[in-house]
Image (tube, rainbow, N blue to C red):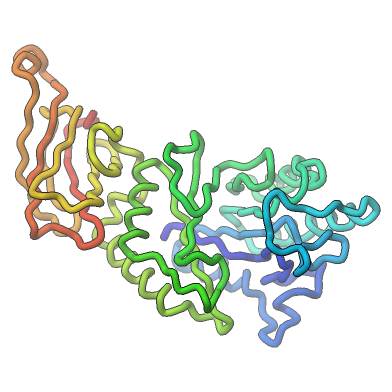
Length: 344
C-alpha cells in the first residue's frame, strides 16, 4: 500500500474523531479515544500517506433532512428538501468539522468527500468549502464528490473501459458491502482482486480497496486472507504496479501493461499456451526479458518486414516471448522486457 483512507464520518454522522461540534462521537463511547488520531499516527509510522473520508451529508444532525427507515430503499438522486431557516446551521457545522480534521492532525494527503449528490453545490457552499480546504492544507488532494470540484475521479465498484481523462482511483469492496455485514459472504476471489489491480494500473489509475472492521476492530478472516495474498503477490510483482505509467495500446498486447522508462511490464491475466506476442514495439532496442517474480531469463524472438529491417535502423515489429510453466503465477504472471529507450 502507498496510502490509506479512514472513514472519519459516514452518512450516519458518527464521528470517529474528537469533535467539539457534536456529541455523536467515539469520544462519548466506552472506548473514549480519538480513532482518527491513532490512525494518522499509525499510517505515518509505516510511511503511508494519510487520507480521511468525510460525508457531506449527516443523517444524525437535527438540521439535516435525514434519510430514515420510512425512506428505504435509498435511490439516487435522493435528498429531502432542506428547511431554509435551519440549513445555514448545518452548513456551519459541516465547515467546522472539516476545519477540525484539517487542523488537528498535521498534514493530511487526501480528503475523500462523499454524499454530495444529496444537495446542490450552492447549498454546500462548495466553492467556499474548497477554499477553506486549500487554505488549511495547500498540498492536499481532494476527490470529485463535492460536485464541480476535485482533483481526481472516483469510479466506484468497477474498472472504467477507458481512463476518465484525469487522475483517477477505483474504490472497490472486498465483498459487496462497504461496512461490516455478517450476511454478506460474497467475497471476491484473490485472483479477481489482483486482476483488477493490474487493469487499473494498466490504465493509469489507483485502486482504493475497502476493508470493513467488525465491532471489536478486527478484520474478518476472509478479508485478512485476501489482503495477505495480495501482499504476497505485490512482494513479488509490485515493481510492475507502483510508480508506473500505462504501457501499450490494447492492440499491441492482450492484457494490461505498464512501463517505467525503458522497462515494460506485461501482465498476463490469462494463462499462456507457451508464448505471448507483443506488437508495434522497437524490436532492435530489446535487451532482455524475464519473469518479474522469479527473475528467470526468458527467450524471445523478434520479427518485422524484411524491407523495414534493411532500411530502418530502429524498426517497429513484434516480439514473441516464450513463457515456461516454471514462471506461471497462479494469480497473474508479470513479464519484464528491458529496452534501450522507449519501447514504442
